[in-house]
Length: 79
Image (tube, rainbow, N blue to C red; front, side, top):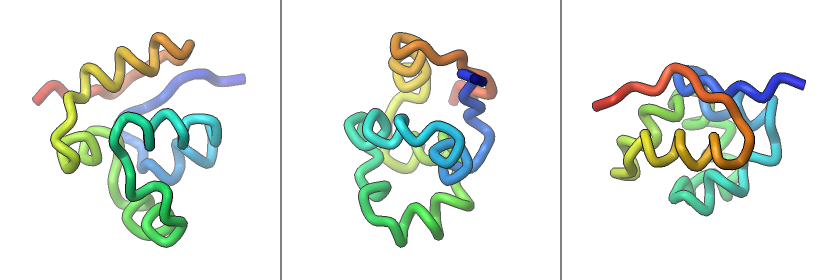
């Protein structure tokens, strides 16, 4: 199983490949992901870097949290 999370890939694709991440992302602040319509529309256009910026969250903290949960991360854009 591929445990790599690419922050440059749309959120929809990340969740499709790793459905267990949805809960972690919602808990982190990605509340719109609880709405299936938002996941299927904006989630197809917005990647994790953009999403973190939109919710005013530190992308490095998100990356660290995912690493603590056993994922390898790539594509993190330090703003």
